Length: 308
Ligand SMILES: NC(=O)c1ccc[n+]([C@@H]2O[C@H](COP(=O)([O-])OP(=O)(O)OC[C@H]3O[C@@H](n4cnc5c(N)ncnc54)[C@H](OP(=O)(O)O)[C@@H]3O)[C@@H](O)[C@H]2O)c1
Image 1 (cartoon, rainbow, N blue to C red):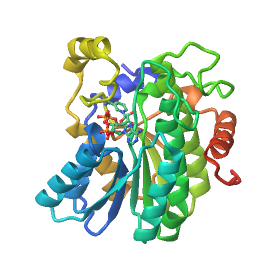
Image 2 (cartoon, rainbow, N blue to C red; image 1 turned 135 degrees about the vertical axis):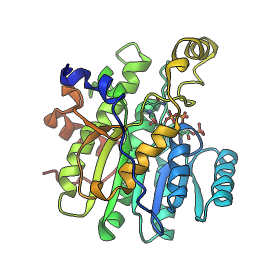
Image 3 (spheres, rainbow, N blue to C red; image 1 turned 90 degrees about the horizontal axis):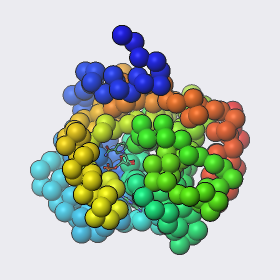
Image 4 (tube, rainbow, N blue to C red; image 1 turned 45 degrees about the vertical axis):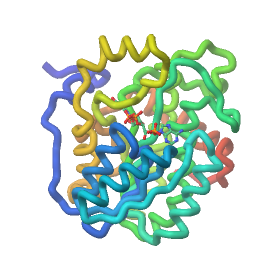
């Protein structure tokens, strides 16, 4: 039985996933949030595949542990750049460091992300989840874009989520000042905003040799949300985590999207791990996407880029 598009994510999760043993020897992958969960497993798989790595992380001790582990286990260079993605000033510093130190960026994986059950604002006045999950990755990508285009081919992977299905994006209330904050909606809003910008960027990058795709890494056991207080953590442990899969599958899926030769020219798609899927209609509204793009530029202080 074929499920309607909106429910296809249920069957995609059980489909056979694609893998690749293509080498990434000599390539450089930049990955955010590599100290835990999806990002950690992606970094490990990339190192195993031969890629050199720049790990963009906020916690120096955790980042150093991962760096040591990967350089000890694999024949690869691993650099750590410290940045808290709830501060756009940190995102700018991280991009500046990378541009100063690396000529070629072959793969950029925007993975750092979080889920909050309560509304918090960043020092710069953004709702935290929207800032980390969308604005920071938007800014980081844009700051590295010219270098990637110059030395194409290159691939950008946005670690998005089936959580985009929760919706929640209201461009007139991005800080949730006028609505009661709901964790899943706040998370959904950030992921919808990111997805909408993926379609715009894919069009802009058409013909440059740089691709951009978004992916859901699977419903996997990670630390996401586990800092939301004892009640939330307890209920997750009891009712949700037993049904989650091992995070290693996310690393394998990201490796496929980053390394597989058949993915070289694929752009502007959404994958459930490695299975292409149609996002919810609200995440496909191109007119809305152009507004999100423009607002994201304004909020991050980027110069306007003309959209196609
Ligand atoms: N797990 C799932 O089932 C699932 C499903 C769909 C999508 N995702 C997506 O997968 C991505 C990774 O999440 P995860 O599940 O692996 O969660 P996780 O285990 O909590 O890992 C999140 C990573 O992001 C980093 N991070 C969080 N806030 C940050 C900030 N302000 N600045 C810099 N780095 C920050 C964390 O750093 P610390 O180690 O310092 O906390 C960690 O490295 C997210 O984008 C999430 O939305 C996950």
